[in-house]
Length: 288
Image 1 (cartoon, helix red, strand yellow):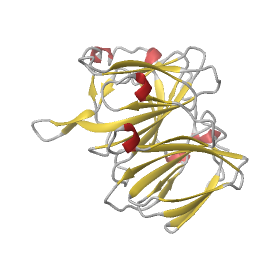
Image 2: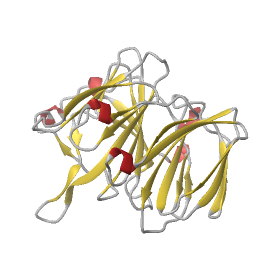
Image 3: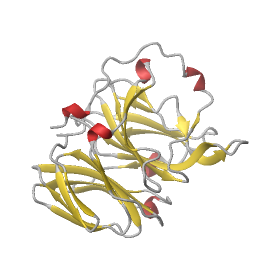
């Protein structure tokens, strides 16, 4: 597998990301992102899938056979607030209408045989974690967190300040493991990293590797591009001068984020002395 398989470039059209699990050789995760103009509609049926829709920028209203929702304080873009996230269960028919000049959304859908209630999660409901320290410090906003009433989907958005490392020390979640007491110590999860930057020349460097280096790729991810993590460790470094945003969707054996650290770098935990004064980069108070 080479990085041409792992990097999904943006398309020059209003549905600028769209790939299915079958197309990328996966079991669970499907992904899309689209730009819409004020008044434009998207009609969809989730069929046998649960779905999470994340507002990257703008406002929408959604009318469905499971309920109706409207967002009027969506962020201008991902660097101007925290996401609204709409969770929809399987067998939901909906019409989504853009109600701002432009609307930018990303969404993932995962096959399920279980039923849950729809829910629009507000920015102020999202837990913010400042993880790591020194120049491995970043902000994580929980959108569809472990324990959220759904079947498979987990979703977070991550802000990595200019020059910092993220998803580091590196971790993996490609085998389901339990300890001698039956406690889950690693889940088997597919994962998508979907990137946004404020400047077209900005980028992040992401490595995807296994311990035996049978998979060992370094990828340059730019605005609106997605990196697939089918297995292995997957650290990120933000290009100096530019903050990096990525949206993670995960799904697999369990609705968790349980992972195993790369043993070569695990010693770094506990060595950090400082927190990055630039964090948090965004808060719910920024939403307008």
